[in-house]
Image 1 (cartoon, rainbow, N blue to C red):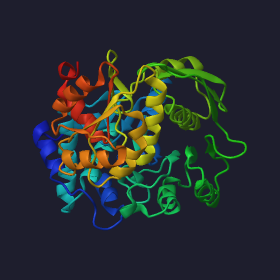
Image 2 (image 1 turned 90 degrees about the horizontal axis):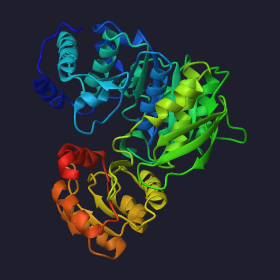
Image 3 (image 1 turned 120 degrees about the vertical axis):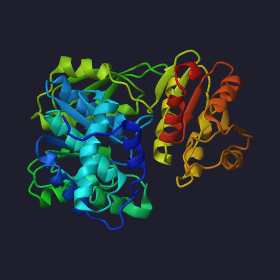
Image 4 (image 1 turned 180 degrees about the vertical axis):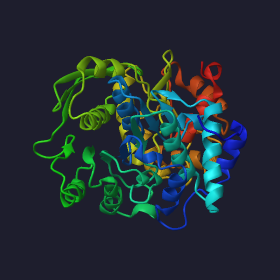
Length: 436
């Protein structure tokens, strides 16, 4: 176990007080930090996952599949919804607050030895890798924070490099076009990694294939891409209500029929995760273990049904592409009438694009705030919703009040909360009693 000593509250205070972004694009800092910790990134096999949308779901499913096949597996994701401990899991269980604090006491000591500042994400990444080393993890699945080329998770040399898709997001940092963003993300593919390229890469997939070819890769797992993809899927049965089972046939590894409590938009992510786990395990996935673990999966913040009657669904869609996918899930699952939508959106996101995507599937709207200093004021968001939909949106800056207003407006049809993972987290933080 770690040798450092700290309490959880002070650990979080120190993390939150760290730099939020690096000044210069470089991996030097994270490399120095992990080297001081003993190079934990070299002690397990790593799967690195990037992509504009779907990467958290793919990271968690890939980790669950590897655990189901008997390997001690660590999963590192971001951001968290309620607690920082959610970001670092081992075999599906987050670190305890005590263990989290001890791990980061070691990380802070290492940073102090180096005498330089690190970003919060560099510290968190180093802490995740350190925790995995201390707990004897055999596989680590790491979600990229942003892009790929200069992301702190790129301190690892992955055996599998996954790209779920490319859309316009973080354009101020990654590039103004899909091609520029794809070029940045393609750098997670290294000479030692098997690339897994998801269907969200269609149109820029040549960038990833050219990168793989230049590195001499004999094999690329193409999920739903090209004239003859390596992995495809068929939807056998769609869920008829929020929280229902999606049944899929996955082709290309072996023939697998699997079920997952998720909307149809997760079909591609299931196929990508199975491709990633299959690449890591040399195509060997046990059908029973695969179906069992996928059926047990939950997806907090991703069309997660917190309440069945009347439905209350939480989805952290934070860009127009994700909002369009969410709109499709609402259309499929709310056959009894359109729900009321509660939206809280960060000011630096494409709020107009999100609202336009969701406008056709909301019977009414409630504008709220999620507690982030970056959140768009509820009144400003309500004005935007009114301009786009032609109807007035209710204003309720407090999330709890927004849920109560939405429940009254829905007449039993249900409520969907979206616009940001921070908004999703604010609902989870209310607790079971508050959400019914």
